[in-house]
Length: 111
Image (cartoon, rainbow, N blue to C red; front, side, top):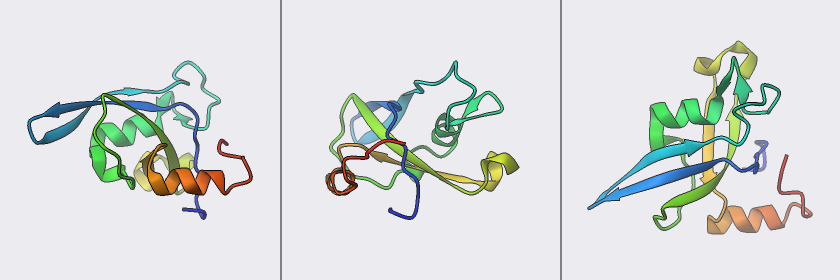
């Protein structure tokens, strides 16, 4: 995890639990109106773009199902070459191992 730049900046997902199926029912980007934000490219939030296409396949964390989860995210690849040439990874901020890792980063948990 430490080789990637993790952004803990307020992105959230809403979860729908239907019997044994868990799905993403909504994605909130706090920067949808800020084209200069780290997650924005070509007026699209890269976090939202990847989650809409790949769902939980972009997730590397584990938490119990909750109605809404705050997530951190990291991008691998050059966003300037287009989203198809990148990979976005997400992790729930309250994932046990991620939370411990954040605390170990000298209090700098957001970029």
